[in-house]
Figure 1 (spheres, rainbow, N blue to C red):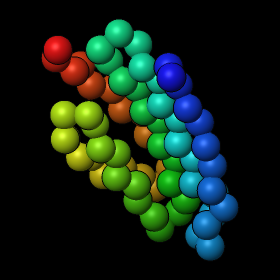
Figure 2 (cartoon, rainbow, N blue to C red; figure 1 turned 90 degrees about the vertical axis):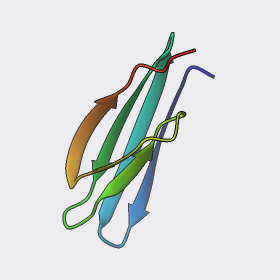
Figure 3 (cartoon, rainbow, N blue to C red; figure 1 turned 135 degrees about the vertical axis):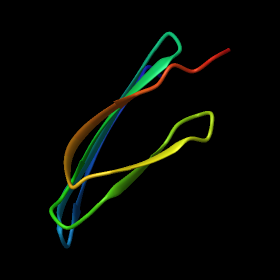
Length: 63
């Protein structure tokens, strides 16, 4: 699988996430509703808290 996209209608608003895998660089876009945050977890274990609002994250993953 090279990409995925999904949404969830939460009590605070719609949560959206999309990721794409290009070579060894995963790109993640997260959109958290107002007064909310999201935590993105990369394959190597790094966690980044983002939001509210849209945030684009990318990391180079070593082999």
